[in-house]
Length: 282
View 1 (spheres, rainbow, N blue to C red):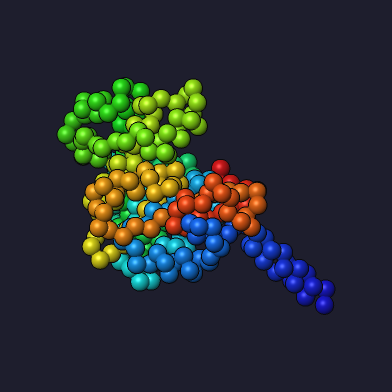
View 2: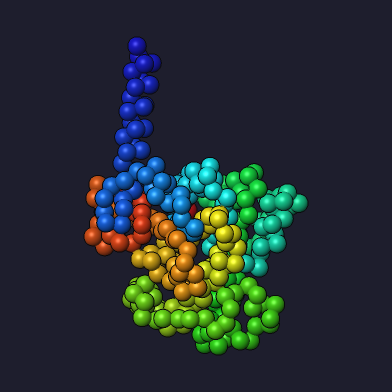
């Protein structure tokens, strides 16, 4: 009887913790479920999964969503966390010609790769799914930020330009999310910082479309700010391919997850609200 009581208490506690750890909302703020989110997104051509980089719930749901979509769609995966000039190393890992240690040595992996992104890459490897390194090499984004904006990219060789969006890129500094960068950064912000963000967005959009397969589905993992409020990456995708069907997910934290805060409404098609007390991965 004592063991049965302990088991019951464990199950009850675990269920309570799961119930209060996160809630999924629609854009308008209506509570929904993971199953309903999958059903709504399964026919989309491109899904942008906006994460908080240190959030374990977001990383877990990225993998869960990928597995759910893989049951019906021919997938291509891609991520901000891998830079375009490391695509060969990623391909070698997927093909099994190098191991995880070699990938870590030869590619510029994020510090939380092993815990947060390796599961996605390994799923792609095990299921023979292409995985695209979509982000601009960080040294080129730094050029834009520190060396005078977009004109700094004209100094690159043709080989180097192959790892970024075709130049010149369109840019709208009046997009609310870009204006928010300046506000958030305060005295540390600058117009060229915003341009560095834009070249990342444009490059990720470029490599998503360059690797999108008609009739298939591309799932892209990126920081939520890169696709929140249907801007950033999606703004560039819509400029180039307005004919495709896009879906967006964002992740936020709130003190109270029982309703969607006003400022988070309209952020994406689906908003994952995580308890702000949730343990971070770094």
